[in-house]
Length: 177
Image 1 (cartoon, rainbow, N blue to C red):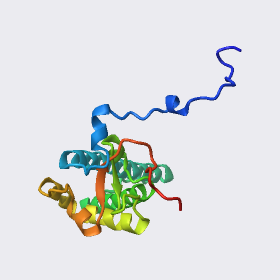
Image 2: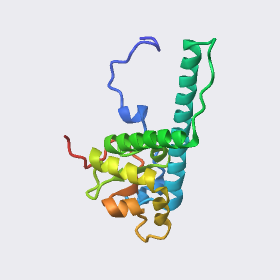
Image 3: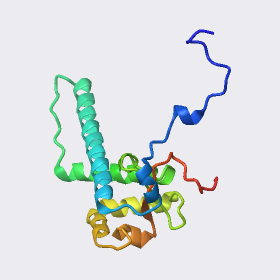
Image 4: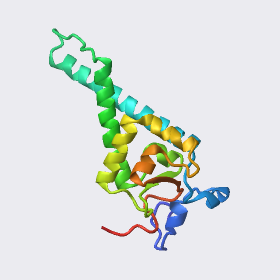
């Protein structure tokens, strides 16, 4: 057998895709995340949404140029239009991520996950409502800094939590369906 031929021995999947969980972090798994972690995750998600919105606008301008290059005049997007587009995209992005995996890209980088009061992924209606509240009232996140349980105003209103969680996409106690 050469080095390029597949092995007939079973592969230890854990060796191929190890979970990078620092030993020091194991005691934090399941605890509610603090303001610094959550603000960093939100900043990453916000940057992602702004970049996607700006890229979409640039693509729209490119299509207009290709459609009629001789009469091309770059449209201007009013600030409120950018805010509405970004807010809509952020709401959809947060909703889908929280309802499917429990984490956004920022949450993944900061090793946190959003869970309901039972520790499961959020149902889509709850994820959508939470996302809408975060987009409409972003300062509610900073309540984490003064709340002894590290909960935002949105968490208190909807009985959700953002917990430290380094493992893969599935929660160990999720039920199928």
